[in-house]
Image 1 (cartoon, rainbow over the protein chains, first blue to last red):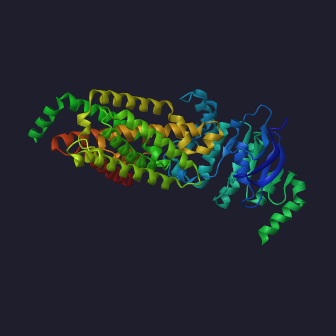
Image 2: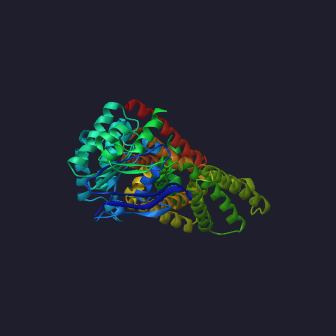
Image 3: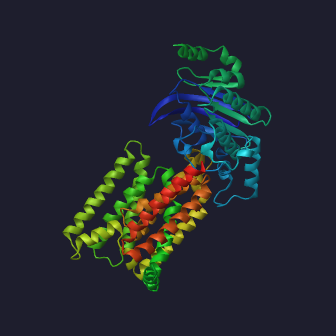
Length: 234
Length: 280
């Protein structure tokens, strides 16, 4: 059974749809990249998958024992976070909230999980540092470690390399690829960066004037791609 | 110098001074705990607006000749806090315009009411003590003392119990909601607690100076400390110490309690700014 199924979904703001009748499914182990022009509804789709905004029509269902609150999420950074006084460890720990219920304090299991993900992202030496003093790439790794605390199975990444320099961007993509190939974590990534999407992803969802969902190989030959590249060329 | 200490020692023997110190410390503690969240969530303007609402509510309670004004003021301020939070979430109405409307409106109507239905010969004195606190902390009734102590302890308890959830919602509301934290409920809780703190703090520093009590200790702590926990603990300590120093200074020097506390807060803030610069 698919981890995530999207059936006849329409997305939009205040009743006006931007995307109609969207159908796709995500299987365990997939690396899906969502591409499309600005304003095509990529971010709205992501919020709908997370259960933050309801779809106008249709439904998005999780399967295979995955609960909607068990989706790890790497959001784009907000201005509030840039001057937030918090240590790396505090932020990573906050990813464990979905297993807390009404329990007020973190236990041994949560602390161990946080430490494990701090190590996994290579943040051991930074664990007590203040988040706002880190570089952009380091901050992204902290938020990735937090997302990994919330999930063992599926990660949703919203423009994970926005604002990073080319070297750090490459590192970030390698890190995400490792999580997919070595740890078997399903990846759904929104990206502007078409070349990287086509390098790493194995499935593509293109939304906009034309909608495409399928394997990367098929996408390379499709009309949706030529539409996007033509627009980029203009 | 020794004359000053004698005056202080003599004052401290009065029960009402002891009550004032205890209540003042507790109020300073509560207000500082939520300061960081308020500053970071850009909620500080709501705090400011609500303090004016509390003034209007106080005027209504005075005109109606309530013997105990706090419950009515508390109720009205909480209702306004919930209303303001709702309009803030509605993108079609500008949140800050709504705050400005409600707060200035409450201020004007409150003053108007107090003028039309004067309850004592000293109107400007009444208004001044509501706006700037003056000596109201020293004239609390027995009921008000216990109500203040109870509410303060409740606020501290709620903060400790929901500490990690408040952190999650403040740092990243979308992530918190995506992972199943009911962010709307916590925002509501934060708004209601802010209203409670404002009504409490009104007795200590008056409605115009409440924001200072909430914001200065948090901003001071954020200059020097780097983690949420250390910032929270530091701002609580700073706030309580400043409140005690301010109250003692006010007793000795016969100055208004509220503005003396805020003056101490400002001095400490400047010291922390300097310390933050030196640390780098």
